[in-house]
Length: 107
Ligand SMILES: [Zn+2]
Image 1 (tube, rainbow, N blue to C red):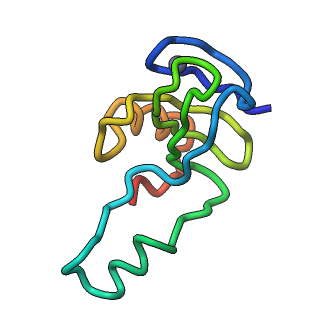
Image 2: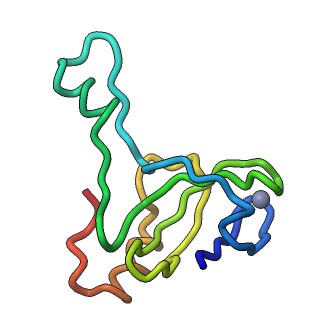
């Protein structure tokens, strides 16, 4: 069972209290971008076995969006943090590298 802690209200709960929102930190492409960039933004998503950054919403709680860094293989959650970040914070990266030294890093 995946257990997440909402960074907005501090509640720790099982994943059924939250709604998944897909991959986090997407770079958005719109009108004026190349067809390949736009197609990638619309359809291409990472699906790693290991460290992944995701969007979640505290659907049955405060209702706010947040981001989670977790391992899709073990369900270990490294950190949850506010959604208003364009890339993972340095302290989150440090936590992941401490637990997964062979992790290749973000991007
Ligand atoms: Zn919450």
